[in-house]
Amino acid sequence: MAVKTITVTEEAYKALANEKKKDESFSEVILRTHKRGNIEDIMKFAGAWSDMGDEEAEQIKKRIGKMSKRAMKNVARKVRGI
Image 1 (cartoon, rainbow, N blue to C red):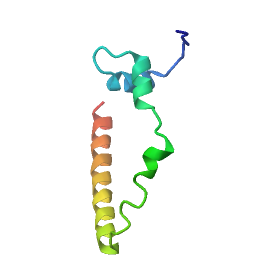
Image 2: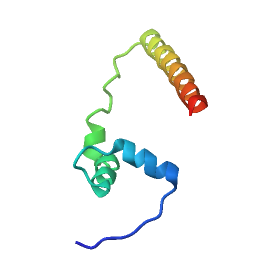
Image 3: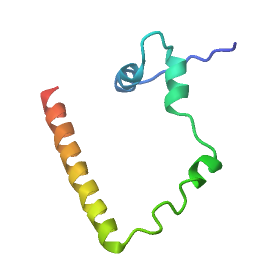
Image 4: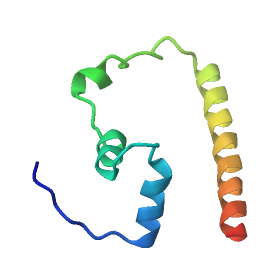
């Protein structure tokens, strides 16, 4: 098997190391986390919410917004704590 040596920042290395499972190589982490599905995988979801009403869609949008704000607050807290 051919190998390539790459250089990554300390930040990128830590992010990759955080994704690494026990007994998994960094190559396996990269392949696992960056696999791209094919168009058939995506298309099976096309139209999945086509029967949803505007009110229900708006409620979901609001919930997603709230979750996003909470997530950003948690990230900010963690960054300040580093």
